[in-house]
Length: 137
Image 1 (cartoon, helix red, strand yellow):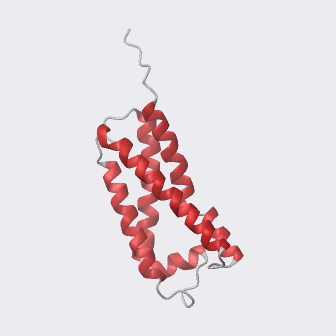
Image 2: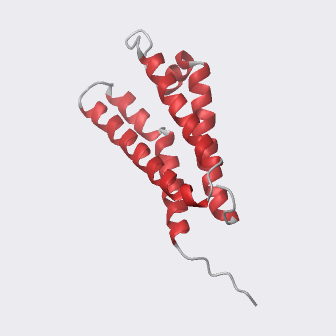
Image 3: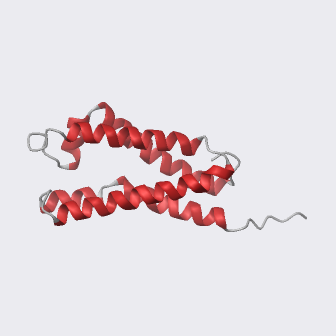
């Protein structure tokens, strides 16, 4: 995200803060994270492993985006959008398939940081494709 205009850097920075902070929280304490989002540990004994795998993925993505230069940033944002979109669809399909209770499925979709990150990523990507109209006077 180096050498970006301030408003694009702000959007990307917020997205990375959301991804990194929640992922670090989930990695360090998966049972408490599961409790916070309404997933039963006793019913999902393998879920702490899945949460840690997701957390590592998002931590790495955040770091890649933060240190990306202009040429690779667009591609990384497209990847982030694809990841967040599939996370949202997966949560929805899991809820529809009955893998979560009705309340849990909606909780996972509505409180998912994927939605917030997806919005920030989409706006940042659109702004990156819009030519800058900086005056040279």
